[in-house]
Image (cartoon, rainbow, N blue to C red):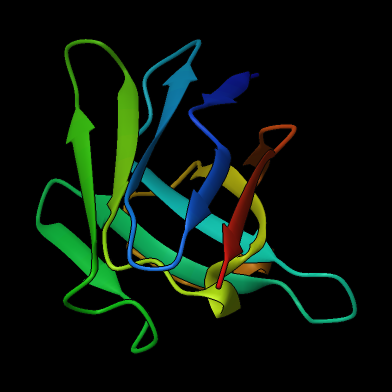
Length: 119
């Protein structure tokens, strides 16, 4: 059983930046960030394993995911934030090592951290 704890959410104006962090209680080979806005489906934002990162088209060039294997943490640096990025952001980990942006591939989930971007 892996427990995940996110931190770093908050409110920012359009064009601003935020960094989210997630600490895992155990070893994880593949981790990801998802988000869900009110009334919308959950969206995979970014995922990373030892081979590198993968991003959703909606955040490419603006968001950067990184993983510290020694500390069992994953971070999401978000730049150029826009109101459409407003959502609850969730950290997730899967038992396998293959990257995926599909929520159903992940077993472990954090409680979420709110990101609000105002125009």
